[in-house]
Length: 203
Image 1 (cartoon, rainbow, N blue to C red):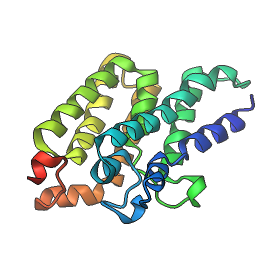
Image 2 (cartoon, rainbow, N blue to C red):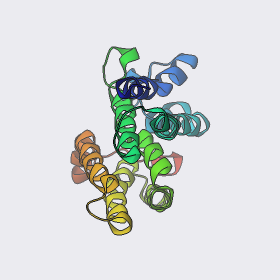
Image 3 (cartoon, one colour):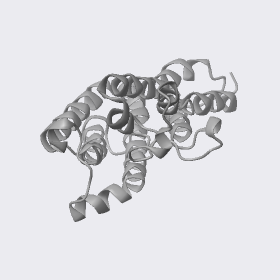
């Protein structure tokens, strides 16, 4: 497989807007409901936890599957891990700017990035995910959990794979991107205006 074709397939897979499709199936345009974001968190908020979990898993799979399936088929020199990371980054880019929605705003890339790193570094990602869940359940802030995970994962990858590892370097770049996509959330957290998650916090 030509590497450009592999990257195009990864981007196309990442572009599948599962949140938008779930909303459309329920007669709701999620771009106009809740936070307006086409990610699993907004699906949880608007459509409920059952559909939210399905969308989260689907968004994670569209990051994991290109990483697992495409690099072994790429007929080009280079480290297979680098090609896997390239496919993962392409899938994340597709999630954030989906081609099927005219390259307009999609999700923030957290679930898709989680799928990429679950495929490449399952143990560090499992620890990171556990911390993410603990923070969300403990505080009600999904954004805070996402930001903490973006910091923790590179730290774990640096400790287990080394600071020169492509996994570590790409995780730092993606962490910076996560902070950039959450810049509005960071502002609301600082002002005490961030939305909390779940019926318990709304009550």
